[in-house]
Amino acid sequence: MNVQEAIASRRSVRAFLPTPVPGEVIRRVLERALRAPSGGNLQPWHLHAVGGERLDALKATMRERVLQAPGGEGKEYDVYPESLPSPYRDRRFAVGEAMYASLGIPRDDKPARLRWFARNFQFFDAPLALFCTVDRLMGPPQWSDLGMLLQSVMLLLRAEGLDSCAQECWALYPRTIGDFLELPEGRMLFCGMAIGYADRSHAVDALETARAPLAEVASFHGI
Image (cartoon, rainbow, N blue to C red):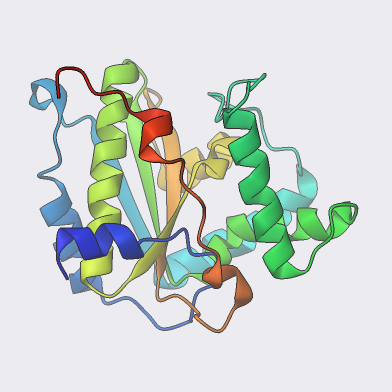
């Protein structure tokens, strides 16, 4: 698979098969992804891959935790700005409506939507999880480095025939995940990622999100 194919076929997969991901595959992917760009070569990322019995234990913990604290534990950062203007608000609304439509969950069925959202914290049944953490002293430029690393990971997973879903929703439970990963005090959770083989028979995995046309998001100067 070439780079163009990997980019075109990457999806945020939300239904996975139970097929295990071999440990040597995720090690190979992460080692190669470490070539991602990093300003000043700081390499500010700290990664935690979780599978097997440890992942089962985390999923069990999160089933209880989501019931105990459905609104989370207090975010350490805002995933989205509080007041999104158009067109960003419109794009976010559209993808949410498209996803729930694919699941057959109407807009007024809030309990069903909440139950589906809670599946984030089971990694959508994926057999492998990845957490990305960062030292608290790092700023926005280093956080952009995390994005470049995670994109590299997701494209390399596609080259291995694997799928993924990056999940900033884990920012809702920083204390639980920090304790589970035994993060030092100066380190914070950025996001999680579900990794595995997509269940192509599930309607949600047929969803292809729209992208704004090039003319809407790009300007060309002297070209």
